[in-house]
Each structure stands twice: as structure tokens, then as C-alpha cells.
Image (cartoon, rainbow, N blue to C red; front, side):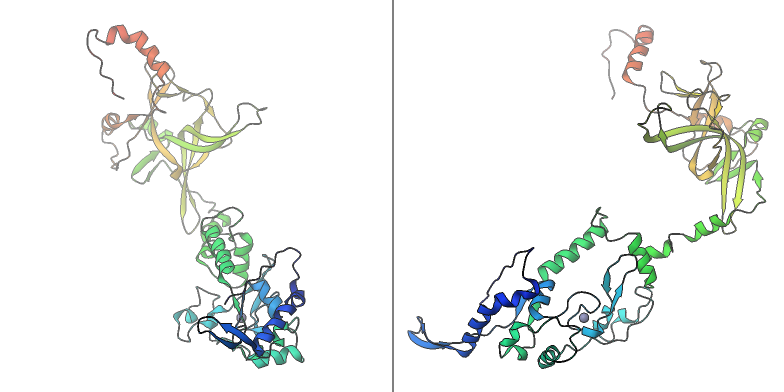
Length: 422
Ligand SMILES: [Zn+2]
């Protein structure tokens, strides 16, 4: 038979619950002594009814109130008692309970694994729970560090002989643990337990998680080399091959027939309409440039090629024509305070003089393909054929209609059924 009690907060009696339990304890005592003359309808006879309370099932805070054990602070485990392994987190400002590997079977592989845990093997054995009478003894005399009171349940004469007096209801525990795991894995704001404080605490405790390895103190090994600065002697190149693509400086292009100094950078930048505009928007913006210098920064463990470019001014030197082609004016140089770009960030483009618009060049992009390092050979013709117009999307409908209005009479035959391909 299950007796249920609901105690609602927030003004619950807490540790004083025993006062309210007294009538129940009185009834339980009577039931233990036996109530004579109870009628058994099934067998049609009278008998002596006896009953005992086997255990209580509750959450952890209620466990403290019902058993009289301390369930908070450094000695929060009623089983481990004074030997509770606890640690106050410097950054998380909470007490955590550790050393759980000692409950594993003695030859369990986790006990020998160091790196996955706190860097140490675990040879400890689980604590022996107090025997029933030891518990009572501790409550009644002497050392009361782990006890707040002598629970009223000890008034039941059999209570001290029960091996299990209180059981935890797993519903709350599983729910809370599950919430935390899911919240952390999915990085749900407000429910994520992984943060700077948690990382620092893990580090303090010698726990080298995989997450921690990369950013020991938030700094990767590569970043350390970067912070040390490059070698002051910087080699510069007239020509540089990256992922099969040849980049030249402008001076080199001027000598040869090929053109390999044009670059395009798609940057995620903040854009403002004017100096007074407070509604800046973050968006992707394309920049076109011509490589002036190629530097290979030497950070000892690795080198980083960077290009110093003349960037075409995005406002005065860049237009998209009626057909959607991007045109640039190579004489309009802007962005002079931010000339360098990582070679890995740019895409190669070609600037071809636009015969329709004097002073403007059409931007063409090179298809992504392996590009053999053929110097001196006539690769230009080949490249031109393979080049694709560098458009920023299809021309919009208005432009298209205008174009049709102008050219329609010449280029569209009458009397045919038009086939529109969308
Ligand atoms: Zn414990």
C-alpha cells in the first residue's frame, strides 16, 4: 500500500516536518502493535491487522528533512558522510561532488584512464553505508556534523533495523540531469552549463576535456605563435602559387601577357548609409583589388601569405551594368588604411577592358579548376574562353524589360511562339 503526502511550498515546514508527521507515526505505531478485530470479507473471519512503514520515497531536499541528514554543503552525501568528496568551484561558485569512479567495479577500465578524467587513476573503494544502528548511534551521541536532528521515524521501534529507510525518487533527478545535458549539447541559451566559468573550473581541477585541449586558457598553440610575431625579415614574391592558382603582383603582370593580379574578397562587414546613420547593418560586401605585393609572414611553425592590394573604391569605382556585369574603374583606389588581406581569403578575378564603357573594366572570374603552372605559354587565350562573367546575380526584371524595349524590334522575330525558359 502506498501512502502519498504532498507538501506544497514555499512555506513548507522543512526540517520541522516531524511535528506534522506525529499523528502518522502514532498510527504507524498502532499498526505495528496490531489492530485486533479487523474483518476479512474474503475469508469471512476476523484477524489482527499489522503494518510497517518500509521506506519513504522523496526527492533529495525532502530526504534531508525526513532522515535528519545534512544534504547540502561539503558533506551533502548521507552515505559518504564525513568522507564526502566535494570541491568548491572557484568560478562557478558552487559545491560539486566528485570522485564517482570509486563506485565502479575494481577492474573497470575507467579507473585507469587519466586523461579523460582528472589526470589521475582511481583506486578508491565505495564507502560502506552506516549500519542501521550505527546511524542511530551517531544521531544520538557525539558527532552530529552530518545530522540535523533525530528523525521522528526512529520512534518506530523497527526503524533502526531497516537496511533502506529512504529512497530517492528518480523523476526529479533524471529530469534535471537530462535538462542540463540537452541544454548543454544544444547550447540552449540559459540552460547551457558550458561556459567560461565551467571551462576554467575544469582546468583548475585538472580535467583536460577535449574541448579544453584546443583552447588551453582560451589560446590555441597557433595563436601563441601568432602572438610571438613573425620574423622581421619578410620574403616577398612576385608570383605565388596557392592551391594550384597562380597569383602575381601587378608589376609582374605588366611584364607578361597573362593577368594574375586581380582578386575578389567577400567580406562580412558593417555598412552604414551615412555618417549619421545609426542603423548599421551587417552584410556581405564584395571588394575588388589588384595585388601590389606578396608577403610570406614567417611564424616559425608556419607561414602565412598575405597580399597588399590596391582596393577599388566601393562607391566611386564599382557599378553593376544593365546586364548584371560588374564593372570596376581600376584608377579609383580606396580603402587605403586596410590594404592587406590573407591570401586564403581571396578569389582570383580578371579585369578586362569594357569596350562599351571607357575607363571601366569588366570583372571575370576564373572557374574553379586545377590550373597548371604554365609560365610563358600562351594561357591567356585558354583562360579567356574558360572565364565566366562575374555577375552579382541576374539582371532584374525592369532592366530586362528595358533591354527588350530597346532591342526587341531588332532581335526578336515576330510570328513565332515564344518559348520562355525560366
Ligand atoms: Zn556519497
